[in-house]
Image 1 (tube, rainbow, N blue to C red):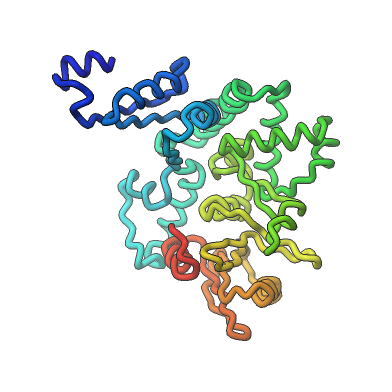
Image 2: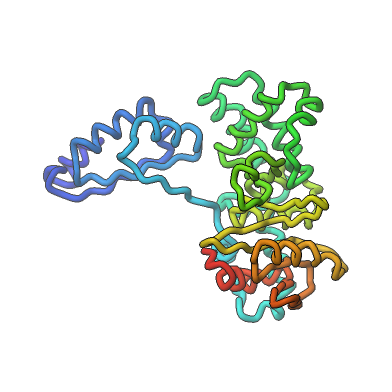
Amino acid sequence: MIAEYETDVLRTDLLDSKVYMFLDEIQKLEEWTEKIKILYDLYPNLKIIVSGSARINVFKETRESLAGRLFEFLVKPLDFDEYLLFKEKQIDVNRETVYRKEIIREFSLFLKTGGFIEAISLDDFLLKKYFRESLLERVVFVDIPATFKLSMPEIMLKLLSIAALWPGLYLDYNSLSCDLKVDKRTISNYVSYLEYALLVQKLYNYSRNLLTSEKKIKRLYLSNTAFSYALNPGVDLSMVLEQFFVNFLEAKFFFRGPRKEEIDIIHISDDKVLPVEVKIREKFKKKDMKPIFRFMKKNRAKKGLIITKDLEASYEENNLKLLAIPYWKYWTICRCLKQFCAIRV
């Protein structure tokens, strides 16, 4: 292919020109890393971009064979702005209240498609079929077993289904081991494989001591809201929205204190700590704010955020500021996140 391009298209030597080569679904080519390595070494001006949908196969091989020769990038599904652009929906992001009904309607559809371009035009039946059969089952039964030696891939699908039923599931390996009749070390390994395959997201209980966080119980979310709808079509909106903001913020931490008070997300950016709680309820009580204020005081976080169903308000206590913003005010939330912690959104 390269010889033909050099002769018939470029009509000069590859060594004399800067050429870009794009190879998609590279994992389907046998011994592709060795071929890429040869090209990389032979032609300094040749810039090679390889991509693939099977993250397990692609990245495990590149790290082993192309170390020092590559930069890795993760291309994510569409965000909400990009989704609206693809659907040619015009919404004035500075007048969210005026567009409230349309935002809620489109955001609900966005959560079901997960930002996957090819899923935007599918109905609910085809969405479930696409994500379950074409994506999740393919990764679980084909991609992961092709890379890691495992005997029970069906257990991984069960773990995904459990995470869809209970977003933010506490990872109690002993309990899961008893329920699934599988050794807890196997469960732990399978969760790690799913995490590596970008199908799940694991959160640690926040502590300023990272070793303490590692030892504490963890929580598990699916990495995309479309997966939750595909595996659990009746999932409650409040749970899906909690998962969305965990995914959106690429959260690493939650908080559960000794009094069992909980905060959904603890976001860390440039040594700044931002507690984020997702409360999609009809009514919101002042006592719901107490755990957040206590956390802010103890951890020197000057600001906090509560994502609500419709409530928009501001609360202050001892120079600590807590904002409540409705989830459908997506762009207001983005602006606040940028202001609070210089978060790239």
